[in-house]
Length: 263
Image 1 (cartoon, rainbow, N blue to C red):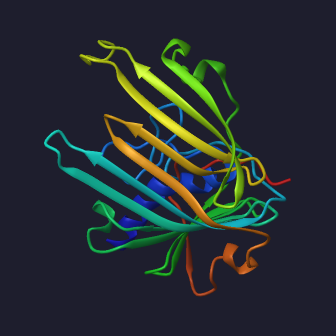
Image 2 (image 1 turned 135 degrees about the vertical axis):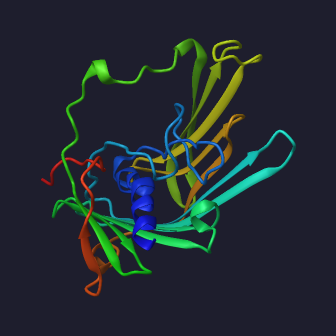
């Protein structure tokens, strides 16, 4: 049962590694889950969706992370979920992401903690289960070549507006803000009235990650992702290594996070 649980968590959380390196904000929430958001529309939960992106070197940091979502049902009932955790990256682009899932189906028997390591230098990523002291290993692969024919259509510019929010200090870090509003016109998907979703993202050019993001969609609710206690400088090297008392298992073949090969 624990192995099955780890496999599910690995599938759900694999993109957290890519998120920390890609510089793109987390994607938006499907209904009823503890999810983050992407400014342009549907995707997967915070850190759960795959983001193809470069390995960030020379910008080490560590920070605490929270991701909270609230969905309001038609009868006024609400569903709330929360993920707390810790993120770190060293100067060579290795990343550490620790998630504690505090609510929802995966935490029905209590909080669940899972740890992600990504080592682009060695060419592997790992999902660590502290309860069983096992590490699921997967080789990092180069991203597939982009094909314009395969690219998802961008929302119509007539239904999408973007505004620059300028620069602010967010939790001790200089960040550039923008807000995006996307409108689905009445009747486009059977909706009687227009559906309007909004996203606000504050991105740190120095760290090349979002430090705060908010998303609101009447179909799925609202989400808030925040990095706090942001520390610049090199985290302990041991943070990016699989502990010696863990058993390493190779992950089942299939799709996983992709990263460019280490330089």
